[in-house]
Amino acid sequence: MMRAARFLGEGRIAIEATPEPEPGPGEVLLRVSACALCGSDLRPLRQGWPVTPGHEILGVVEAPGHALHGRRALVYIPAFCGRCAQCAAGDTHLCPTAELIGWQRPGGYAEALAVPRQCLIPVPDDIPDRLAPLLLDTIGTAAHGVRQAMRLVQPGPALVIGAGPIGLGALLVLRGLGFGPLAVVEPADYRAAFAAGLGVERLDAAAAAARRFPVVVEAAGKDPARQLALEAVAPRGVVVQLGESNAWSIAETRAIRRKDFFLVRSFYFPIADVAANLGLLRDAADDYARLVDATAPLEELEALFAAFARGERLKPLLVP
Image (cartoon, rainbow, N blue to C red; front, side, top):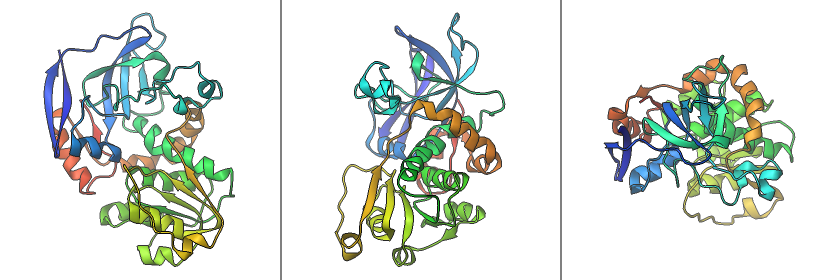
């Protein structure tokens, strides 16, 4: 038996004893070392979820005979097939048959999980446990979105709307890829203070709407943020949409209608991006380390999520 979190809805999390997973064909057992909290998990927290969530997972492979047995590995969320046209093109994140670990398959808010072998990402020895999960959503998702924008515009000024983990990751990635000066719109003082410590200008929504930015990263997933992003982007600029929601409603104002611009919807990242993302992490390891501002065991996961939902934590880790 092992322990795993069950998300009951309305902010409640139960820690239950459950049978240890038995890896199927092509899978290995991973003992969870850490799982980072993500803003997208607030939906299962509110609604309840049929499987154990958690998708920014670091663990130790327990598979005698496998090349990674006894080694640390991250978990790539999409259980991609490796055979379709998207996988053959390197777009493993776009595999049409992939189930997502922590969403459709049991995830990392547990002591162990079964992981498809192709989803194991070995972690180099110089990357500590505390930082390794940041290579997934915080760096991986943000960097893929910014690289999509770089197909259309050169590095320059940029605005990030929403300084949650993805937004703060986007600020660090933008800086690492040569963008600047940078600005952020974020109502939570704690998160905005971290951005200020990076030399990022804090703007309110009205001030941001009065300016125009070649790149705007929308990382909040809320209608006002999307409205602002479309209005604040410069002519021939790029809006990178990273925030998620079930639906959106936008008013097409003059500030949106009277210009050409590009809208990039970016989802996760190709697994081949990991090598380049390791460089981003190594180049700014001290700043990324400051993002991880709390850890907790399984018994304290509900309280940790409550603080995270209030904007009082940046990128906390579950450490089973």
